[in-house]
Structures are given as C-alpha cells and as structure tokens.
Amino acid sequence: MRAQEPSKTQLRGYETLKALFGHELDGISCQALADRFGTQKAATLRDLQALETAGLAEQLPNKRWRISPALGREVLKIFNNVNQAADRLKETASRYGIPIL
Image 1 (cartoon, rainbow, N blue to C red):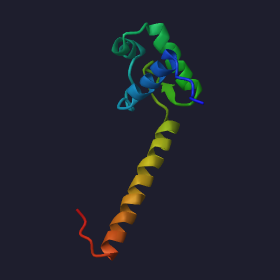
Image 2 (cartoon, one colour):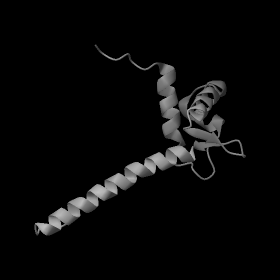
Image 3 (cartoon, one colour):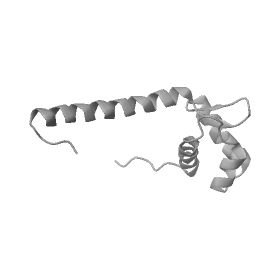
C-alpha cells in the first residue's frame, strides 16, 4: 500500500521550514517568505504558526521567524554523529596504513 501524497499545504510548510535555515540570528519576515513562495502572507503565517506549535520554529521579538533552538540542537546531533563516524573511519584507515585524503 502506497503512502498518501502530502498535500500542497504540507509541502508548503516543509519548504517554509527549510527556508528558515540560514536566518538563525535575525530571523526572516513572514512577508519575505510569502514573497519567496508567491503565497499570501496569511497562509505563510499559518504555516509558521503550525511550525511553532510543533516546536520547529519561533518568532523573535522583532516579529521575524527562525528555526527553534530545539530543532537546532537536533540538527547538531546529526552533525556530531557524522563527525564521529568520520573520526572512526580515519582511525580505522590509520590502523590499516591507508592514507587519509
């Protein structure tokens, strides 16, 4: 049985979440996101509020939006795991006398 395709609204929400990356310090405005995706500001605001409810985004005092610190910490787990795997590969290559590029 094939999983149901995500709705346009869901896909727009995922794209909104991805667009928040890179705006961790000052955030990005709802209007800038709406302009980026060619959607109404109200729809973008609903997407951002849904992401906020899910703990994935937060609104800053300047009314701009960014990914939530909690999501940032989860992303760091991936980064740390990849680094640990790279360290293990380097150590194993070293033990076998394989040059590390």
